Amino acid sequence: MSATGYTTIYNEVLRDSTLSLDAKGLFAVIKSFIGLPGFALSKRRLGYACSDSGYLLNAAWKELKHKGYLQHYFSQSENGAFCHVYNLMQHPSAPVDFVYSPAIDRPNGDVICISDAQRDYTNISTSVLRDKSISLASKGLFALVSHLMKIPDFVLRPEGIRSFCMEKIKHFSTLWKRFKISGLLKQHRHPAGEENRWTYEYELCETPDLETPYLTNYHVDGSVSTIATIGDFLEKLKKRVSRIRKNVRKQDKPRAVRRKERRQIEQQLNADALRGRFGNDLTGTVVTAVYNIRHADKLFIKGAEITQERRETVAQMISPENVERFLDSTTLDLSRIKNPAAYLQTALFDFLEKQCSTDASPAETTPDKPLADWELAWLAQKAEARRRREEAIARGEYQD
Image (cartoon, rainbow, N blue to C red; front, top):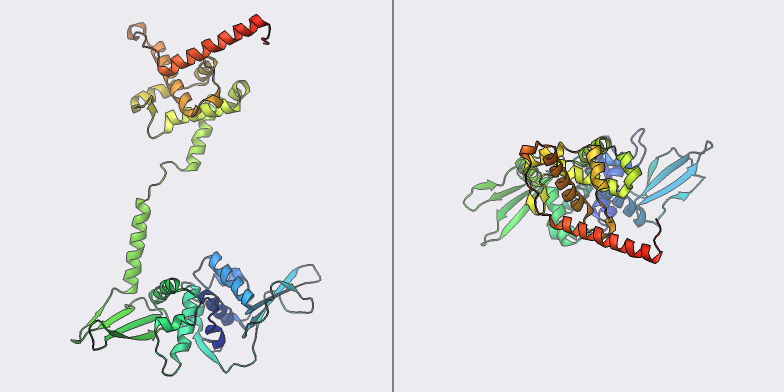
């Protein structure tokens, strides 16, 4: 790193077609910090110098190690602490990943550059390499394009740039567009004298320019047209993403709120006492049924939606005494019921609604309604159980 704000990057690294743009960008970022007083190399520290996720940064870090551009040694000090040091290589070498080397006496996080000559290099703007808002791939492209533009008679085209990269055409096209949107590259399009034929000129910016368009069209009649500025494009993109997020259906009640309401129901029903009498599974299913009666967006009983007024009336009847009375009057085998919570929800709702009618004045009582299907099925199960018990008693096989 020189005092003029530029970092020397070796062209051999930039031209390595087996190295990804992310890895090239990470190499350039590490090189920009070498010689900085007090700098200790770590992935966490590098995360503050790029916009990539921890996953992409770690992948580029591993690639540099695997390709032999970054060597990792460690030793142990007298107090038992581990000391990690690194070598950044100009030429790829044999991979050295986490190798114990007690002979290395350097401070923790120290990184040095191992090079034999610096005749073949390109100076890259250090401010770009350390810019938090720019991705590693864009920094790798910036360094590569900076090198290629200095080659005499080299025609800068995306196809030619991709020949120095390992990315496939689809992935490269995405990274190339992001590179232009980052404000580091301006594209000027001129007519080539034939219909639908154009020639391109490129301008590299040493500081991100988001105020001017990244594409400018020059027409035959002398007029000039541009697309929206990068800032406008990013602002529209933010609004579109925000609109998509608003349209995504969210759960009406967050999970933490549901837990809180469920705990309140357990306290109201004295769930510990219910577990002691009826078991944990049945008590938990009853709590779920009560929760649905009170807090579900829509409540369906026997296929019909229950009005809010009926739900509020029934909810007022929920108490530990009524729930115990309901469970005492019901014999359930949860393993034989397909949806125990829905079954108990229906049975409990009907029980509590009948309890409301029982508590009303005699003048307000209504004639008994025909038994529901689930009640008939339950009575049939009780009769069958009674018959089997009587047969077992007659054979002397019944044990109480």
